[in-house]
Length: 242
Image (cartoon, one colour):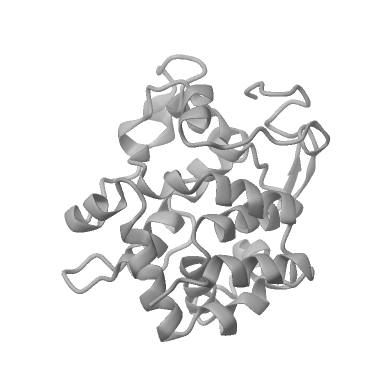
């Protein structure tokens, strides 16, 4: 079964569709089956899925002593900067023997969400939450559609702290971020928890994450998931870490 999800997602992006509009087009059983086959072709992903790789998320405080510029050190500083805690949005994990590759990808992408923020240089502003989900759409279109579908009916989504998640359904897919995600598909096979001591810039190069355009760096904004406005974490300097 050919996987046409990427081209469908690109077509939605080109017509400036919303993230909510991807659900009916990319969330069908047929799309998920094609997604399963495509994910098995991503280097490293099949082994992750076979192992059901799922180590505990690290506590940011325990990473503060890692080398400056490493993924773990940047992650710890980012989480402290925005007053975030690991595992922000609870969604049912699909890790049993019957978990499909796409279901497993949903779990990994949700659990690794803050690593994606750091690797992609995305703030937690409402605008950057739409941008990072556009990035994920480029990485794994069907997995994102499945996540959004499940999140929409999750009993916790009505909580005030998840306002930014409710709002992204009406956010327009960002073309630049979508294409960044397409270029970085190798991230799907990454074991983030085992890469914490690796320099952040080296990982961006390894996984093919293009630098974010300077005009998108260093922008503050309302962090509705935390309920406060903060100065941006990433400076408005090309390629630098906040």
